[in-house]
Length: 158
Image (cartoon, rainbow, N blue to C red; front, side):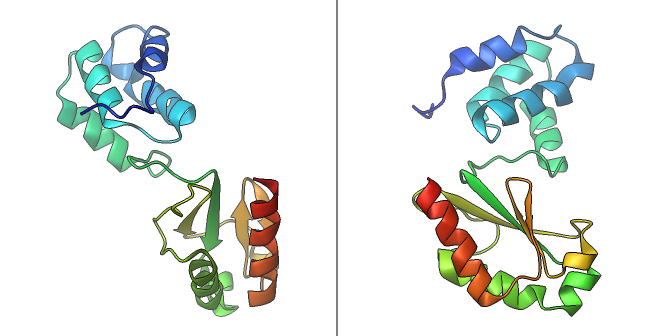
């Protein structure tokens, strides 16, 4: 079944930028991810057909790379660091607060499609621990109060 929110015309436009060669699979998947915010099943089928590869090979690559997702994500992706410095400084409590405020668990998206939560191994900002990132903006020294404030800021900006 085709998701009505997926414009396959855009998928064809992405495919037509590349020769039908296996070596372009990842580049195609990255462009699809950028276009839709995830890799739709329908598009994986088109890629497989275009490159004359089994769908399982496209699926395997799409699930191997963390930068690719098979599920639509929120407009804002909240990444909570769980690296050593953040963990020691309370990233678990930070993650619990984000999950409670949004009423979702890591890997899920809010019903309004506004937020998704991800736990990451390291954001490379240990001096700011515990830290979270939303749209490449770093929020350090996070507390429960700051979580509520930051999320509310994004809700207002919708």
